[in-house]
Image 1: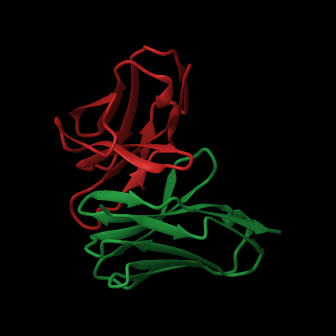
Image 2: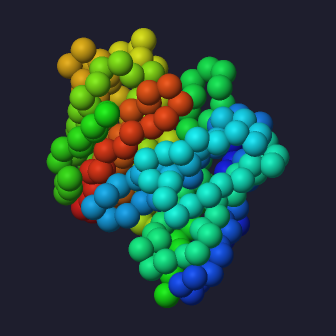
Image 3: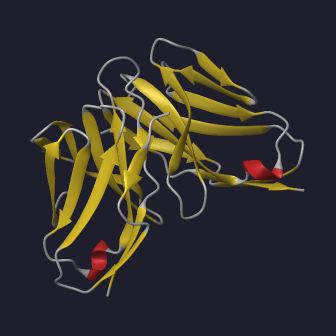
Amino acid sequence: DVKVTQSSRYLVKRTGEKVFLECVQDMDHENMFWYRQDPGLGLRLIYFSYDVKMKEKGDIPEGYSVSREKKERFSLILESASTNQTSMYLCASSGTSGSNEQFFGPGTRLTVL
Amino acid sequence: KQEVTQIPAALSVPEGENLVLNCSFTDSAIYNLQWFRQDPGKGLTSLLLIQSSQREQTSGRLNASLDKSSGRSTLYIAASQPGDSATYLCAVGNDYKLSFGAGTTVTVRA
């Protein structure tokens, strides 16, 4: 089974802090994604990566950056956390051969005070 | 831009009843369509994936159909159980990106 893990289930940070969210997948997938999920707004794509060191902006990249130094690991960085970045963050991965099915991690609930 | 709509937003049924969840999308040039389940405070679990060339997929009590020309997909859950209570999300794939609906929250009453 595909496994996508995220470094924290719950995280509380202060405004202005630099925040790192880590995601690791064990299926040798080329594509990895970061979403945020908010009530009434659904899931929105922040960034995705289609290969090591390659990235593309999603629908809401402002205030975020990403890093992919190794194929299995994709990090989301909040350079200076703000209260409007309080949200559920979900990581996903998919392969490029076959179905392109996306598999999700358990999510990180981030609260910025 | 792909718009994905799920109706109804919420559904409550007695145990044993069949569930019918609807998903519609505006751009029929899709690569695939995925149905997910999400429990409160948790991540998404993939239930079924239908490729654009397929009409339906089945897994146990779940069956999903796809009509690309009309921009619709339906998820059927047979003989619902209280454990089926969750939010069900439809996501339409264009290449390797997904566009999500807002979900249907299902409550199955014992």
